[in-house]
Length: 155
Image (cartoon, rainbow, N blue to C red; front, side, top):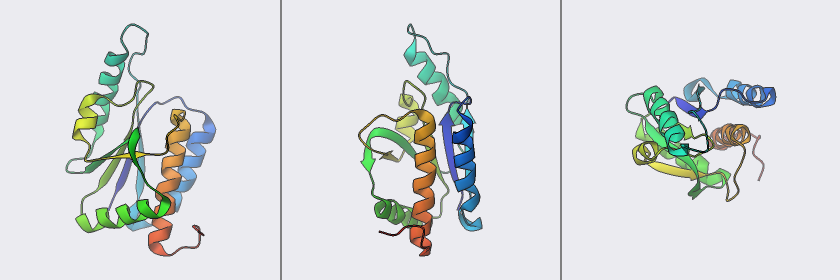
């Protein structure tokens, strides 16, 4: 099964890319993670909906065919690490690849929300986009280690 993280934003601090690359390299071959960056929309005070729409179009255009889409949103389902591991096992049994979408400053476009089969919240607070990306990748890696019985997760 392939996991794809589609994230709005291409100019993030180096530590975000380094951290995500480090975790992505740890995934086992049967659960590879690909991180796909999409350009932000034209942000401005006058047209925030336009920016979100542009990002949404880019996310949907890069979405692999037939995947389960999980939208990362503050009002989504909060999963403990073990809950996420159970979801990962369920997704694996389903047999489809899974993509995760992180929007830009305006959030996800309505079209992306509508396409999503599930919504995942990293917590009730708003995170900077780079940090949300890194936390999502780490939590996915942690879920993989729980499923595999690896000692990374102790708790």
